[in-house]
Length: 378
Image 1: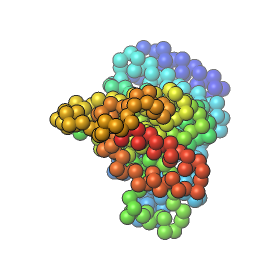
Image 2: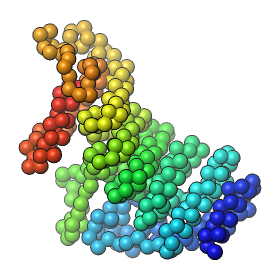
Image 3: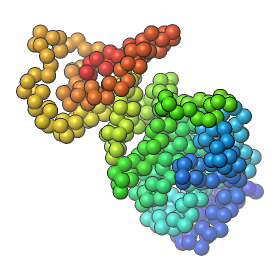
Image 4: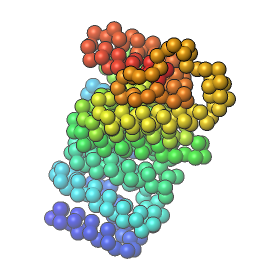
């Protein structure tokens, strides 16, 4: 009966022309299918699934932040209202069909009163244990993040949504990881033109697992505390499609983000690592992104480029700047690209050299390949 009712409701909501009188009944019924306790904290830009633990954290209790609670000892297990996995997927598809139908008609103002409910419901599905539900939630959130009519609404939620999607990047299924990469990419890249930045770029720090050396969470003194470098795991993913999606994400961040220069030194090492990828399409995407960055660098620093070309930047003429170059290089990168990479290399070069002495042979090999790529560009 539940399956039949959901299918009938999906058909009606996706075909009825005037949904205004029906949405007021649809969304309250939809939210009853969501576990209790999910909220949004605009001060910390995170979604909450355990209100008591979150309030204790804000009061100073030694527990981890809600978006990082998945890796904490004794973390709460996600509960579901609907025990059937197929039914949870059908309910989610019903919401997707309704919202898509409204957007295709150009009537986005109809969902403005229910925008918060839609975001809250979709981010809750990212924690669902059923992989297909995660994929559908990521797909729908990606579409909504790219929707220009909803841009002002997503500016408020972009960082929190990106943080909510980070744990999905470690899912055991490649299809889920691929969908999560597309979603996190879209959430971080939501344009915030009033401040000339990406609305979700604060989540880039969480994406690379960065933590200042002089900052230690209180919870680390009492229980295990783990930071995860999601981006490093994605660049070494065993599935080519996931690595390709990661390279395209980095390309958009370094080429298209409004505040891309603020994050250049953090992201360039991973793009250089993608240049050294075994798959030719992944390395081609990474090299093309760096070429575009170099071309833009030349436009913005014309005086420096002209001076270096006049006085000779390549050093002694007896130096070997011709072939053979290591794979995947067919020719020496353009001057702007070399200067662009050189400006970002200072931050990670010493850690890279330290990795050459790692006890793990795989780490040493990857570090050596990255060092070779850096030498070609520098």
